[in-house]
Image 1 (tube, helix red, strand yellow):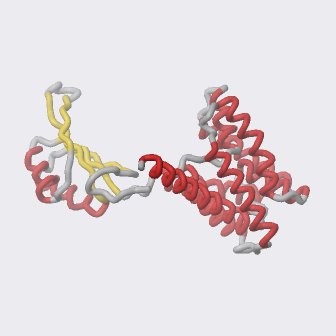
Image 2 (cartoon, rainbow, N blue to C red; image 1 turned 135 degrees about the horizontal axis):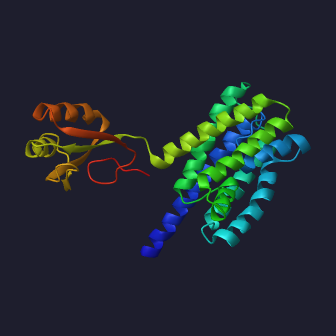
Length: 287
């Protein structure tokens, strides 16, 4: 039974990788490639070479990614496993399938719209791939290699690679506007990627310090039917022990809880912070 469930989980994960890879290919073929917009990384470099030498974008992506994949295996270890290989191969194949075999047309002739929607779809696809424990190679691997041999963070390393690729695209196409559109696309793809990985900030956390903690606990647990944790703390200046209340509520409950706390104790010290993901009873399940 356990083996059967494990097989089902693997199939589910690879289906997720396939969906994410297909969405990335759609973002490239329908929006970015026709507009000559390089979104950075291997895909951006492949778009440039496609227009300079009439090479298939997917094939060029594959040619770049395969040696990078094995380089990543050698330098960084087995974290670049079959999921990464599956994802970048599928992105390459689906990109050329849409672009060459089907011969689709651009979704829009407006380069600004192409950069925005192409970046959004690319970010969604990449986010899904990451969610299912894969990567698409390219600048991800280069960024981690840079991090291994320097003090540069992985994110900064990827950003450096993307910056040079987009700048190169602007120079190669003799059009600085295309470079700007590339940066716009990169911005939207990274924001959407963060949104998918971190989740929408649908909840808020409350950290509460009050002399009327019992009344506030009753408000949260009885009236609002929410759980919480009572922590033991000590004031910096007074050095006196005091309890700190911590709870998480949905966005629609924020205003009510804040108002009711201030009614109970106008002098309460309250910190309200965004929460991107909550796993547990009382909150909706996330993928």
